[in-house]
Amino acid sequence: MSAHRSAHRSAHRSTRALIAAALLLPLAACAADTEKKPADTKAADTGGAFPYTVDNCGVKTTYQKAPERAVTMNQHVTEIMLELGLEKSLTGTAYLDDQVLPRHRKTYDAIPVLAKEYPSKEKLLAANPDFVYGGYASAFDAKDGRTRDELKKSGIDSRLNIEYCAKGRTTLDEVYREIDEIGRTFGAGDRAQKWITEARATVKKTEERFKGREPKPVFVYDSGDKTAQTVGGTGIGNELITRAGGRNVFAGIGKAFGDATWEQVVAGKPEIIVILDYGATTVEQKKKRLLDDPVLRDVPAVKNKKFAVLPLSDAVLGVRAPEAITKLASQFSE
Image (cartoon, rainbow, N blue to C red; front, top):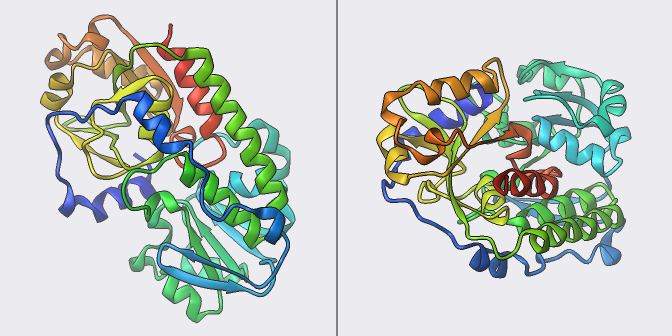
């Protein structure tokens, strides 16, 4: 498991409350829930207008102008910036989980990488940023001196991807809101709205293509041996599964990622196992671990060798979400 995911997991271990009986979310109900338009997305009114005030995870910031020297920490927020054509506003990046989207590789390679994982506070400050954008809560870890309050004392504004501060379930509305608010912050509201319009069309097309299918129970295997690190019910991963025609057997876990016992995996009777692809452990190694576990021998997905694969960067809140739904839907229908 990568260090930022491990830090996030440890910080919440005391609140871990697993539910053995899975909460199965109907596809139709979710679709009705999440197709409403996100609030405050009229970028035509404020796309390049300042001052712009935004409340992000309880931190209210007023921007008099767009940040000019941003640092992104975590791949999915770096890709949001690149997708909106904001590479000239980036003075540095940090922490990849896997490969940057091919369409952004050349642009990404031209931006300084401050650290393979998270940079020290000293290295971060040496880049002289005026804005730091973190993808996971661990980006602003107190023990490393990178809290948002500490950065503010140094005159640096910040933003945390809203997947890690959203109350309740994270849906596509939060994806659209994240893109919208980043667009407005950097004076690129029109570009953000264009992306949102295209994303909605992609999701609609996928749902129309696969509508009418009975949702299948799905278990997401991230990592773990003694227990299974999996996708819970509050993160965008749960939304992707549901939109793709699945039912997350661990939707009852009240966080984006959490631990489940193998006995709970068995009780969930998943018909499909989604393997998250990242890090040093390969997809084939993860499959072997699941197939070789005698505890799992009667799990339908294991008996039928029914696996789907999704890069970790697809399973977090970012610009990959619409295409990730299409990927999963296609694999679920095989």
